Amino acid sequence: MNRAHIILGIDPGTQLLGYALLKVAGNQQQVLLMDVLKLSSHKDIYERLEKIHTKVSELIALYKPQTFAIEAPFFGKNVQSMLKLGRAQGVAIAAAIHAGLDVTEYSPKKVKQSITGNGNADKDQVWKMLQRVLNIEEKPQYYDATDALAVALCHCYQIANPHPIKSKGFKGWDDFIKKNPEKISKK
Image (tube, rainbow, N blue to C red):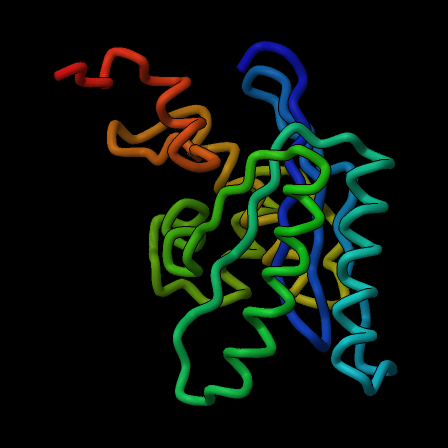
């Protein structure tokens, strides 16, 4: 990755949605933005989802990222919480897809492992490593923002050192066939 590349990282939530934009040029990373969208004042879940879609769309229009990375919901015991989190994630993903961005999901464990070397690291450990790696001085008010930055940096690392089994991000069978014509068997 030699030319500048911007990654939009999202930590989905229906109370607080974390977002961060990371500019990558060669081995240099620069934080362009790291913040949260506060949604708790909106009581209606559909209004919250609309706010998420609008915010993600605005960030894409303003910063023009090339890629979109989002934290996948972890599996908890509360089904209603999982449903709400999945909806928030889906709306953010839909905004990215609508803008033509490639979307990559990372599990919380993968993000923590990528940033700290420990998949069970706590939020403060992740933040301290982000501070060190990205030379950030001021701590944000919410860990949701730092989690979004961690997702973006995790994606940066994955692009720089892709695993051989890495998903190619196909948009369906037609896209797969177009990108892999040698795999078509003509019997």
